[in-house]
Structure formats: C-alpha cells, structure tokens
Image (cartoon, rainbow, N blue to C red):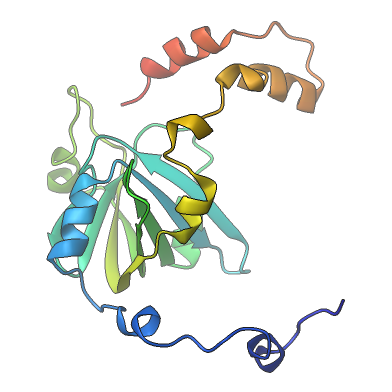
Length: 203
C-alpha cells in the first residue's frame, strides 16, 4: 500500500472523467433542477471555516421548503436546532458552500455549489412562516454550479428499500448514547419522550 499524494498518482488509478459526467455541469438551475428542489424535503449542507475545517449538517422540512426565486438563487430557512451554529459561523468566515438535495424514493441527487449569505430580512423570513413561527434567519445561496448526480451510491446503499430499513430499537436511544459518551449520572428519557419533545420545537 502507498499513500496517494499527487493528482498524477491518483489519475493513474482512475480513468479520466469524460462525457456526461463532465458535460452535465450547469452554471444555473434549469427547470429539472428547480423541480427536483420543489420535491425535496431533505438536504445536506457542507461548509468550511477559514482554516478549512469542514462541517456537514442536515436540513429538512416539507417538500419544497427551499425557495428558488430565480435560476441563480436558492433560499434555505434555518429552523430551530441545537444552536451550535457550526454552518452559520463557517459561512461568516468562508461563504463557499455545497448542497446535496435528496428526494425519498429517488436514487439520483442534485448537487449545488455556491456562495452563501445569512439574512434576516423581514420579507424573506415571512415567506417561510409555519404555524405562526418564523425562522431565525435564512441562507441565501448564489448558485455557481449545479448538476444531477447518478444513482449508484443510493442503489448500493438501498437507502429507500423498505427491506433495508433498520429498526430504531437496534440502537440505544440518543439520550442513552450521550449519557454513555459523557459519563453522565442522569435519568435517560425514552425515545418516545424525546420525539414528543422535539415535535414541540420543530418550528
């Protein structure tokens, strides 16, 4: 075995990217990309800080929760979370980000790269009101690159296959795992209690 340290050494192992893999890159969102986002209830947001430390965070809501005001822009509401603000603080120091959109039952994904800014404009927030509650902020991402990603990874993982679903009871509850990791001497809430608590704070 050897550590691969150069592009030349890497390319000696892999075939050159060619054909549709390269040609499919878009500089703006076309109708197919917009429709994909309209149907997507889930995305992964990748950011990195000025030192190059990377963070990836999930974001989800009802299908179409991300707005597409035009072919060069997407807007993502920031719903209540754990207030770590890893992604948002990264964006303050380095606005470059990437997003992968996913649709349940669809093995293809949509990849977007762009430049983000954090906004709290009243008119932007108002467009994402749910049950009388507004997001604290929104991410406005200017799109530089967009393309549909092939189905191979999701096909291999069988992500949407009902036969591949894992029973939640296979793992300890989140509370139990964190108790063990932090060596806490506390009573652990049940999975049902945690879900009920989360439902009160989704928006």
